[in-house]
Image 1 (cartoon, one colour):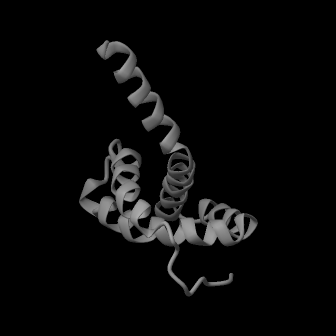
Image 2 (image 1 turned 90 degrees about the vertical axis):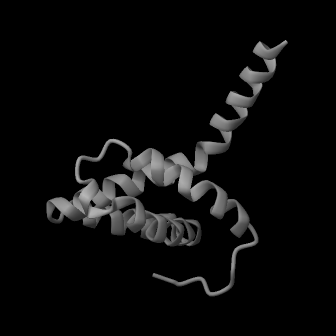
Length: 105
């Protein structure tokens, strides 16, 4: 897998979105003692960078993780959810703001 060295121009967006996405994907996990939020706060930005470089490579890695032990399977599932949520979070925020605007009048 290729590694991206330079910083992304949208680093500020990651700093805003990542904690929200991590909270949403780990909220229902029963193993909070494993400290999933801290793990995903560090892992998700790199997964998103690698997914942007090569989506097929990232899918291959996550699919292989999902065939492993239960811990990697859970991490893979949560990361896949995080990717989808991160890529679509702006739509949810826009819809929420639109509803607030419509119903505030």
